[in-house]
Length: 145
Image (cartoon, rainbow, N blue to C red):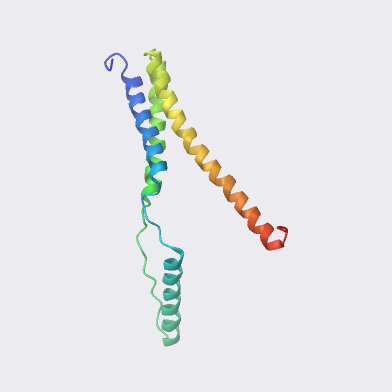
């Protein structure tokens, strides 16, 4: 099957990998442990304290430049979407070459469903963010009675 339908087979494989990566990453939660609010505030307070003390002494304030931190969760999401796009491209090329219809349809289905899965998750996050913002504004203005 691979010799007669190389693009659709690779597209099926990449599409299945992409959808599995997306679902497993969503199910298991974030990979990286982010800093808590208390830790972040404490680091900023210490940095301000050091800056004020060095300013009072007349010294130059040296801010250490930290290397950019790579977030593994973003890398996993971007890699999954990239693999899904490759699956869609392979399915398209397989369709242009008149390969097996089931393979082409499967590659396109898995690739597109991965992208739709990520879009739905993003839109749910936006909707809940807007609802939270409206709730906080209503609470602060006294509209919640």
